[in-house]
Image 1 (cartoon, rainbow, N blue to C red):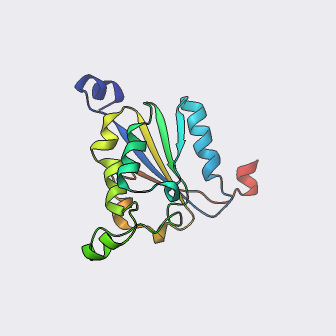
Image 2 (tube, rainbow, N blue to C red):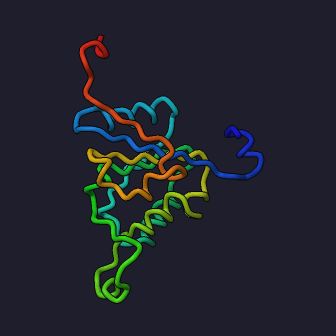
Image 3 (cartoon, rainbow, N blue to C red):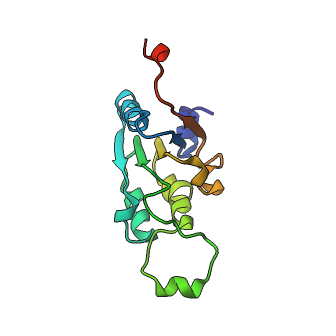
Length: 154
């Protein structure tokens, strides 16, 4: 199904990309090139500045259509709490973004309220990420970026 058939049926679409590789391999430059080529707005989301899941929801709802949501260095921006754990311990802690809250934001109802959205996560260490974050439907494409070789540069 293409974009136009999704629009006819009223189904919002989004696409998730994981860009991974060593620092300096062009992950951020690729995102800028995508936005420039598609003429999309970029929302660079710093998870350390978000107070809780509700705050994250509000930010995602405020995004415009035809936009790219970028979360750089997802493996080291915050310590995402697992969905399973001691609920009593969670009540005593300060509110914060949880793994479940992040999942809801990227593939739940919150992200289905707009059209033509791209979500891009970047990381230097793909192996540190929760496997649930990497599954198709969340991160549809995993793109490894490496340093440019001389032949590629030519």
